[in-house]
Image 1: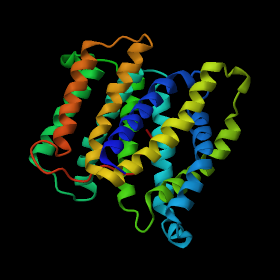
Image 2: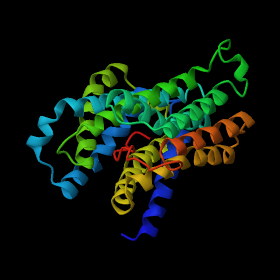
Image 3: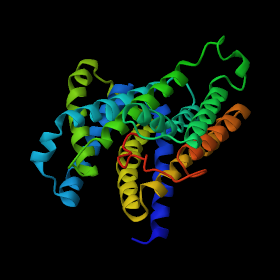
Amino acid sequence: MGKHRAWWLLFFCNLFWAGNFVLGKYVVTVLSPLWLTFARWVLALVVLIPLAILMEKPDIKQVARQWLPLVLMGLFGVIGYNLFLYSALEYTSATNAALVAALNPGVIVLFSFFLLREKITGWQGLGFLVSLVGVAVILTRGNLGQILHMEYNRGDLLAIGAVLVWTFYSIIGKRIEGVAPITATASSTMLAVLMMLPFAVWQGVDFSAMHPLVVTGFFYIVLFPSIFSFVFWNISVRALGANKAGITLNLIPVFTAIISVLLGESISASQIWGGLLVFLGVTVASGIVGGKRKNNVNVQQIGK
């Protein structure tokens, strides 16, 4: 594939992931975070499993040997991330959730240092601190002086939880050996669906409450961020490399903000300035500025 086409695929890949934040906020008004997560990935498996078989011809014995990390990937990346994200969208704006989520690459760098003993440069440490200041500006609505004395939006705190569980998912994904990316994603997703099944049955769902906007949003989430974005991402990573592809993840909060404005949501000055600080910090922490960029981007970006 030509590099020009790969960049266009990344453009739509991140645009679709941004739509997950915006439309997810509408869908969780009817479907619970658990049911949205469960139904989303049940339907996505219909595509992911044949895709893994056709493209990677997985070794079932090798997959079975990696059962524990695959279970943990399903627990953190499929269940944990999505439950935190969709729960956050019940209380905060899609823009805020996306801006906080942009902290992910920097947090992965930090946790990789402590848990995997990967080296961290002074630039990366500085970038992480700048990103933290940006998130603090967003959470405090620009009032940093009251950071220890204010009550925080529950949704913003849940969005931070999503960042943390995605970080653990990404670190675990680095430890998987002998299992190709699509196969690992399909396997961990299937395990996650099985773990969610009894809870989804127990909770139940009122399908009669699903109005057209919710149905449209749900099928968008199944088709575009769950399947198309994943396929586009993996094709582009093969053409450009994870380093270059990872740079485009910063487009997600930008697209989220644009879509939200088009739908009538206002953007505050604290979101703009905080978002700029997060982008600057993530750019530095990722090594794009001030040094060589390391491959800290997880190829299996399924949870966005």
